[in-house]
Image (cartoon, rainbow, N blue to C red; front, side, top):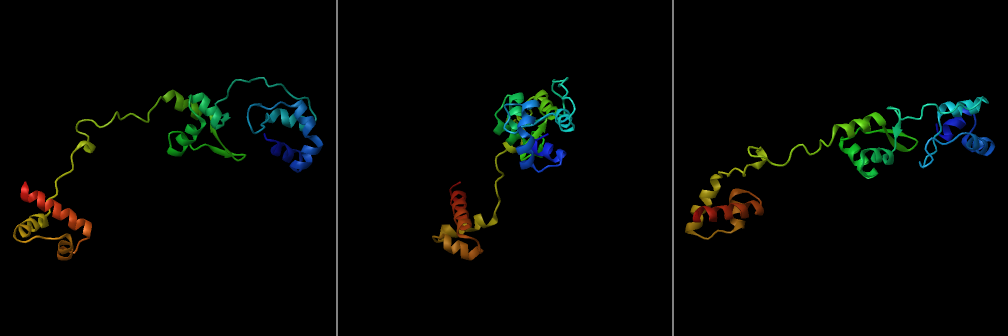
Length: 186
């Protein structure tokens, strides 16, 4: 729970709860992760303090699969930078995560699953023989090229003339003229 959650459970606005009860609460209930920027408290301990009951000790401090991890914690578990965790989430290599308290959190079980699955982003070691991406471009059989080559043998042609004659752009006319010249020499 955050201090905002605790104040709501107490029935007080956050600023009032912090002024009246915040210092006492922080002295009695420890933050779950003191290194984290956002102060999160164990729900059982916080609710016991609100009710005036003795604060229970945290009996099981081992990681739970449904624990929510920040990008820093997930990165430490995966051995990568926090920015890479966010990039993995945006590309689908890691689940999107859950937005809470203005931050994105990932369940421990999802991070562990990614870690245990190994690196599956680079399964394709590159282009292999027979790979359709490995083929050279197919030659184009444009009938206009032979016609332009034949015309160019008799009179010099410009790209503007070709563009007007075939109703194409200047760039396409340049391409056709270059292909016709190569056709004539080849």
